[in-house]
Length: 223
Ligand code: E4P
Image 1 (cartoon, helix red, strand yellow):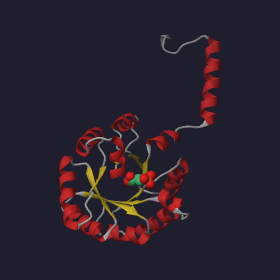
Image 2: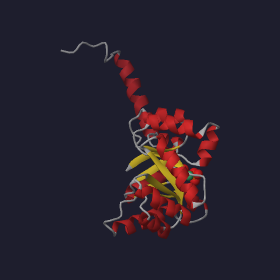
Image 3: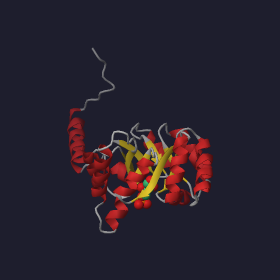
C-alpha cells in the first residue's frame, strides 16, 4: 500500500519525505487555509519535495471553471493530481481533464456508487472519506471493502482507491488488510505507526545492558 501524507505543511512534508516512505501528498482547501500561505507557492514547494502525485483541489463548483482551474493547477508541475469533488460537474471535469492526460483525484466520495462513477469518468484516484463516515455512525472501512470488490470485478477499471479522512493507526492497518491501493495519512498518525511501547522498553533495556559492557561500536577497528 502506498502512503500519501495528508497535509499542506511543507515542514512536515520535508521531514516525512526524508524517511523515504512517502509516495505522495494530498492537500485540500482547509489544509491550505491552515498554513496561512499562498496556495501556488505551497504547491510548488511540495512538488519540489515529492516525486509522486500531489493532489491540489479546485475551488470552482461549475464544470468549465473547474476545468480551467484544473488546467492552471496542472501547469504547476507534472506530478499534480487535480482534485475535483464528486458532483456531476466534478465528474464531467474529471472526464475532460483525464482525457487530456491530467491525473485526477475525485474527492469527497461517500458511497460505492459514487466510486463507480469516478472510475467511469476516468479518475486516477478516488478518495472515500472513511473518518467522516465513522463520525456519522457509518462504517467507513466497509465502504473501502465494497469499492475494492466492485473495482475488482472489472479489468478495465484503473482507478486507485485512495483511503482518506484517516483518523488513527487502526484505519491504516485495516485499509492495508483490505488491499487498498493508497492511504493518505495525517502526519501525527504516520508517526504513530512506528511507535510501540514494547519497542521503547526493549530498546531502553538493551542500551542499559550495553552501557555496562563499556564497549563502543564505532571506536572499534575491524579485523
Ligand atoms: C483527503 O484527501 C482529505 O484531504 C482528507 O483526508 C480529509 O480528511 P478529514 O476528514 O480529516 O478532513
